[in-house]
Every structure is written in structure tokens, then in C-alpha cells.
Amino acid sequence: MIQPLRIAHRRVFFGLAVLLPCVLIAGIAARVPVMRVSSQLEVTPENAYLLRQSDRLWKKHLIQSKFFSNPARANEILVILQPEKPISDPDLLLYWVESNVSETSLPSSAVLLGSFVPDRGLSLPRGVHNGNLVLYSLAHREVIDTAAVEQLP
Image 1 (tube, rainbow, N blue to C red):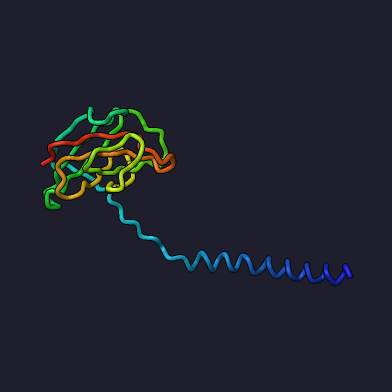
Image 2 (image 1 turned 180 degrees about the horizontal axis):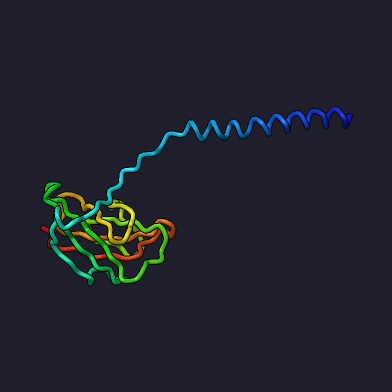
């Protein structure tokens, strides 16, 4: 009784030893590349001019905030954030909120601008003049910091 089971198991394992690498290679070959469209834009002095600059907007962190107008893109407003010290919270996202922001939760009307990467430009929603920038940690599911932004042209 044991000998026929050993023979059957040996054949199954040899078959799997050949079949599994073939399935893995076929799966890798069949993958469709994912195209990622980033909302992060490079801001160069040739195509944008500085509207406003401040390092006192944020409540908890010292982050220099620069707002640029990009006439090449119908006066799109870009924001570049440069923290003085690296922010250690994981998975930071930058949101735009037009209403008041609670210190603990993100409102449902928040507009995602993109992932927070220092020294990279993020485009603000069109037609905004007053509102709040919100740094949100996706891993911790909490608001890390907020900045009130007023009087954007």
C-alpha cells in the first residue's frame, strides 16, 4: 500500500517541478505594464513665476511653501514644499480642503493633490483662492499637519 503512494507522490512532485516554473514564466510574460500618470510636475524658472513664499504656514512642522503660477498651463498654481527636517511619518499624501480642517480626521470634501515628495511641484485645483493644505499619513490614517492658504490670485 505504501509503495504505490510513494510512486504517485514522486510523479506528482516531478510534474510540479516542471509545471510551476513554466506557469511562473508565463505569468511574468503575460503581465501588462502599468502606466502611471503623475500629478507631480517639475517647476522650472523658465515656465513659472513665484507668487508667494512662506515657511510659517504649517502648524506643527517647519516647511517652506512656494506657490508658482504657470502661464504655459493656463495660470495653473503649483505648490512646492521643502521641509527643513525630513518628516518621518509614512505614506504622506497632500490634500487640498476649502473648508476648515479638523486636527484628527480628513473631511470628505478633500481633494487629493498627490503623494508628498519634497521639492516636487503639485498642482492645486483650478479656481481656488483660499483653503488648507493637509498632510495626511495613509499608514497611520491621521492628519499630520495643516496649513491655511489665503489670497492666492
